[in-house]
Image (cartoon, rainbow, N blue to C red; front, side):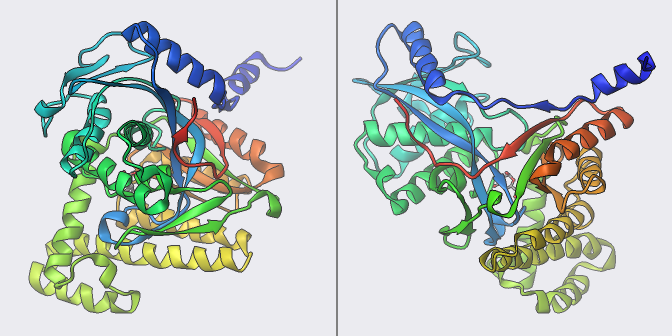
Length: 423
Ligand code: GLA
């Protein structure tokens, strides 16, 4: 017989896998929730995916390059248009309105600081489209979010983008029909997030949710948000991308994210460039010397590390794009490792849970691992041989027990479709 102490530890370390929601059943449930909330039929149900970022972290707001893709996990929005300009937003999970349950009011009264909590991400979208000159009707909305919350997988962008494709169709804007239009929808979602929800994020997530294609990663050039679809067929190489949600705290609005962004913008200003994208790897030394000169050694040291992360990370995205184009997918692993080191040491946005997840994954045979998304918690990814995925997840779960962390959660990331109408 095995030792009961050992047995219970094994049980505690059993990896927890997120289950993919059944899209059709979730869409029908969202329509039902709409009927009970508003006593009428919705005009339709739309869904938008969360994302994972393969490489290119904290570079979108620096005009850099990043390479996210859409996840199968999506947020659903059942929506009906109205004759007036009232917007009502509710959650399928939390009944009623109020700080947690949603919001209701006139679109004309929406502005920065007027909508509290998660509802701002939804209400901000018709507001931003109206600000951009579109004729937007009032709306009744029920949100059914199936992207893990707080996992760094862009549940908030999924929410915005589900509402965006719904409003687009109901207002007859036609933006959802091609990539150029979707880029405009993404820009409205970014504005909603920045100005109404108050999170100073950079646009990668909305591009991923609205402009991805199944089977491909999305190479985004954040100077002008032009995109390229890069084939990302991991199964053909016997590989999988394992998402490891640390379930540690992750909040973009708590100041750290904004302070990184401010530091980058200040550095660009001091270097006389529009964005840090303009600093090339071979110009890093010169940039560092200049920052030391104007800021003094004490202050410059940290700023130089922030700049170094951005510049080297953009170079790593190019490297991964080149490796993928050459079919050298396994060689992406070490580049992921280098990205993590840079985010941990130079950009300082990792945390112990993310470091332990990546370290344990590598020790268990992952080809590479890095934190993904904003950091300070949330998820990490690892590139693994498909035959090793379960073992890597088990090793990470074990390591979390050893460190006294709450249990992590896992999912296999498969490049999936962009936001669309589902009912
Ligand atoms: C969050 C933001 C994105 C991006 C990442 C970091 O996900 O929403 O805009 O800045 O962090 O790469």
